[in-house]
Image (cartoon, rainbow, N blue to C red):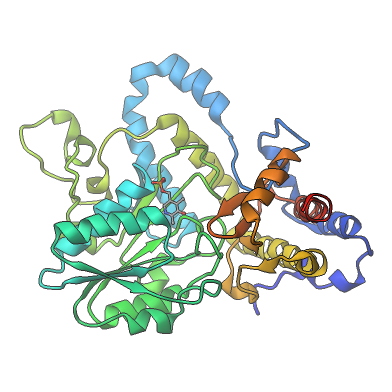
Amino acid sequence: MGTKASILTAVSELPDTALDRAAVLDARDSLHHFRARFVDAQPDLIYLDGNSLGRLAHVVADEWGNELVRGWDHWIDDALRIGDLIGTQLVGAQPGEVAVSDSTTVNLYKLADAALTARPGRRVVVAARDEFPTDRYVLEGLVTRHGMALRWIDSDPIEGATTADVARALDEDVALVLLSLVNYRSSAFAHMPAVTAAAHDVGALMLWDLSHAVAAVPVDLEGSGADLAVGCTYKYLCGGPGSPAFLYVRRELQRTLRNPIQGWFGQADMFAMGPAYDPDPGIRGWLAGTPGILALAAIEEGARLTAEAGMTAIRQKSTALTEFGIELLDERLTPLGCSLGSPRDSARRGSHISIRHARGKELVNELAARGVITDFREPDSIRFGMPPLTASFSDVCRGVLALEDVLRTSF
Ligand SMILES: *Cc1c(COP(=O)(O)O)cnc(C)c1O
């Protein structure tokens, strides 16, 4: 497997105790120095959840403090400039195909509604039954409004939707297929070009949710032929709580599809304040209103650091981190009633692992009380997120050892 990390090749020769092994892996980690460039207000906290801040001090003091409303003109361009940065450096888009705006939920609504409107006569939208809730809810509302129906893809809860699973749900009645590239619970990593091709074979549009994929796994929107995509910036892109999301509309579709939210940020000449809506023909036509400027600055910093590290190195480290976590899980947690809730094949896994345990929710709370921050996902998954720029092998190890200790002493 091409992405297998070289840092891990010699794990079997590593020192015996888990923490010593983690220290050796950290010493060999070429991205380890990036950690120092993130805010670390609580050095003892083990943060397996992913978040950061960056340039905020500069934005608050210089731009907000000094420029005030005079900064407005370049703030508008920020949504497109930072969109281009994410687009060209991180997700394989062309300039002018990605914009930062609104929440993932709102962007999903805009793109999915535009897609359904562009496929009149078709009555079905295909999505995964275990898709992230907001994605399912948005589609549920849209199909009702458009007089259409949802058709669910059922797949193995750990391995996720295979191309065959998607293909089984497709026919000429399908207008749109929505899938997360990396599943939020299991971390299953879908095959982007093959799934997209299957959707196109029946004449459907393909919309990818990149929320758990951007800055975690390599994404090639153009190479895979994707039509539309949305993604979250407060996960691996480190935009901070509530930072705006991004959207991608393939250039050929920008004129034929139509943004259902006709806001002033999408207006061709927005400061003319004209009487009627006349959308910008490019990606700006997919904006709606004022984005959160402070968060945009944080996103830019996260995207720059990610681009500087490079997606190849990030993927290598991410794979090594999740492989190390799985190795420790097998060794220490499986005997205590845990099991892996993520694909074992590293090529089919994103940058988090799910550890399943019937009392997962209590375990996540107990871990938090001990300074180890993870996530619980229904019904039984403890999610260890491993953002490659900030997580260390020692973090992963200390997280697993803490879970082992909780299981041995309190359960
Ligand atoms: C995190 C996430 C979202 C977040 O949506 P918001 O509108 O930003 O709250 C949406 N979809 C997926 C798949 C996610 O992982």
